[in-house]
Amino acid sequence: MVNELTIERISWERVILTFVVRVSGDAPDSFFLTPNSRPYEVELPVRAESLGEGRFELTINVTQFNRRAQVPNGTYYLVARRGEENLPAAYPLARAEELGDASRAFVYNKNFSAYTVTFGISDDEAAPYFLMRTYSFGRSGGKPSSRVARLKSKARKKWTKTKRKALRTVFAISAYKRPSDGSNILFASEARPNMQGNLKAVHDRMLERGLDSQFNFGYSFRTGRTSSRQSAFALAWEMGKANTILIDDYFAILKDLGNRDEQKIIQLWHAGSGFKSVGYSRFGQYGSPNLRNAHRLYSYAICGSQHLRDVYSEAFGIEREAVLATGLPRIDGFLREGRAEEVLVDFEKQFPTAKSKRKILFAPTFRGRGSGDAHYDYDQIDFQELYESCGDDSVVLFRQHHFVPDPAPIPQEFSDRLIDVASCPDTNDLMLISDVLITDYSSVIYEYSLLERPMIFFAYDLDTYSATRGMHKDYREAAPGNIATTFNELVELLRRPQLSNEATKEFVKENFDYVDTSNSDRVIDTLILSEPATEPQVPTEDEDRRMSERVGEEDPGASGQEDQLNDPTDNDSDGDYKAEEEDEENQWQTSQ
Image 1 (spheres, rainbow, N blue to C red):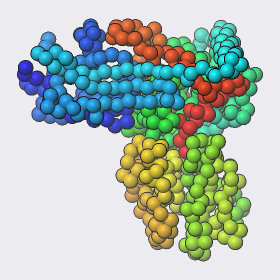
Image 2 (cartoon, one colour):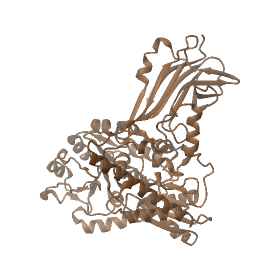
Image 3 (cartoon, helix red, strand yellow):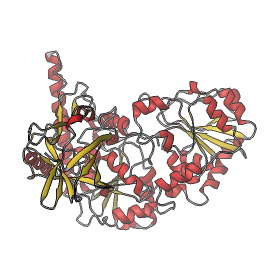
Image 4 (cartoon, rainbow, N blue to C red):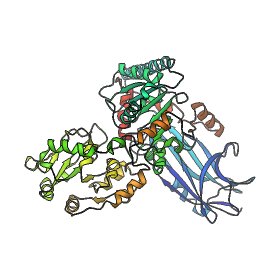
C-alpha cells in the first residue's frame, strides 16, 4: 500500500495536539477527522498550516474542537481531501510502539472523571490506517456506609435540587420583565463585595457618557462570606430581566441560570495575562475545570491584544472569535494624566520616611491552594541584609497578596526603610509611584509594564511552582526582567546602579494593542452598543447531543453527567455555588 498521507510526528502542548504530516503529490484542499463507524458521513475540520515541501502542521485543541466542546467520543480516521479524493493518514508501522507514549489521559473533577485521547492502527491488514480514539467517562464516589448517612445524603441532594429549581423558576419569571429594546444591563461579580476594576471602569464611563438615560443598570456583588439564600434569589431575579450581563470573574451560577441564546454575557476578566496556566490550559492537572464549565457560556470575553486572543480562547474554552482585543478598561484610570502625582503626594504624607527616595515595591503572589491556606514564605528574606542594601536612598514597600491575612514580619528596627503598605487601598496606585517592582508569578506585571520601569522576578521556588501550578509559557524566556532564584541574587540586582527595562518594552508590544485611556469606550462601543462583526457560533445542548449521535458512540461526559456523580464532599451549605466557587477560585485564580 502506498501512503499518500503520512504522520511524521505527534506532540502535545497542554491541550493542543499537533500532527506534522507529509502529503505526496499536490497539496490537499482540507484536513478533517471522520468516525470509523460512519466514515465521511460526519467530517470534523482540522486546522492546518503549510510548512512547505509537502509538509503540514495540523492542530487540534481537544477541549475545544467541536466548537465549545471536546472532540466527541469516537474512533476517527485523520483524512486529507484533494479534489474528490480522500487520503486517510498512515503512521509508520515500524514506529507503532511510539503511539502509546503519545497518548494522553486527562483526569479531572476531583479524580472522578477522565478524558482520554489514544492512538493506534486499524486492524485492516490491507489498509492499516492511523486511528485516534477519544473517550470521556466517570465514576461515582460510592454510597455512604450507614443507613443514616445515606438518608442524609439523599436529603441533601434533594434539597439542593429543590433550591436550584427554585432559582430557575425565579429566573424564568423575571425573564418576562426583560425589555425587547435590550436596555437592561447587570453588573455582577461573585468574587468581590463591591464594584471594582474593569466593571467599575465601564460603569463609570457609561455614566460619564450619559448612557444611564438609555440603559437601566442592575447590580449584584457577593463573595463567599456575604452570600445567602436571599441574595441568591435576588441575583436570579436580576439575571432573568437582564439583556446584557457584565461579569469580571468566575460565575458558577451561569451553569444553571442565563440564556445564551437571548442574553449577551460578557466576561471582563479581572486580571491581565500572567505566567500561570489557568482554565483549560491546565486541563487534567490540579485545579482542572470540568468539560462542562460556566466559562464556556460567555457570549464574549476581552483581552489586551490580538496575541492574547488565543491564550484566553484556550483558557476559557471558547472560540477565538469570541475574544476581542479591546484592551482592559481599568487601564484607563491607571494611565490618567496627573494620577501618579496625586498619589505620590498622599503617599509621602502617610509614609514620610519614603519621601524623595527610590521606592521598590515588593508584591509577590500567594503560595497555597487558595484563600483558605494562602501564605508567603518570608523565611526566604534576610530583612537585615535587605535593609542594609537599601542604603540611605531607597525603601522597600511590602504589599501582600489580598489572600494573605498576616502582615509581612518586618522587624521594628528596620521599619524606616522596609515599609508595610497593606493600609494602602489600591495596588495600582503603589505601582504608579514605584521605581522598581519585585514580584514573582503575579499578573501585577501587566499594568506595571506600561510604566516601562525595571522589574525583578524573585522566584525562589521556580521549579516547584512550575511543576505544581503549571506555566503557560517558559518563565525564563517570558519574564520581562531579571530573574533571581536566591535571595543573594535579589540583593545583588538591587545594588546595581541601573536595571534594564528593555524586556519590559517588548512585553508591552506583545500584550497591549492600545496604550491609551479609551479601553472602556472600546468595550462599550463594540460589545454593549453594538455587536461584533463576526458572532461566535455556540452550540446548544441539543446540537451537542446530535453530534454525539452522528458520531455513533455514547458520550458519558454529556451535559449533567459530571454533576450527577456522587461526590463524597457534598454538603448542605447555603452556598452551593459558593462552595463550587471556592474550588474554582483555586482553579482560576490569577494573582491580581
